[in-house]
Image (cartoon, rainbow, N blue to C red):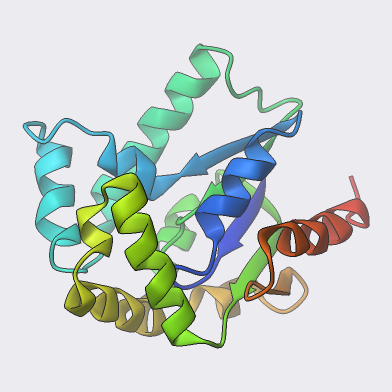
Length: 194
């Protein structure tokens, strides 16, 4: 089982930003499910599946999502980028629903779930639109798709917090500056048992 921290929150809450920062710290390995899908070749089966769903603001079905995750994690272990014996896996964007949480349960030793909360929806929409320009992410450019993604999060993804329960979930205010969010996360990490 992989020792794991989950970064959780609605689209635009700052999961990717925090994941990238944590991934630069020794003994943390960041895996962003959305990035893995966006890096697929469009002509591949998984690439076409991702494009079909993401262009509508929908989640990719569970089986291809977990298949991609397993493939990427196995490759990271094989190449030495991720060492399960010494590294903590930081998952960003996975699991996206309780079915995926069940599918991953035998593989993940979840030590903490960091729920990045931003009560200002307009701030999250602006973040997504800014990211669309900066990172050429078409799924973040269209306002209707952004709203659909936020609704999908509320309906399908948010129940994962209940799945893991209050003892593992740590609420983090993501409306603050990224450094403040990072400090809050690291303060929780510092007090977790080994």
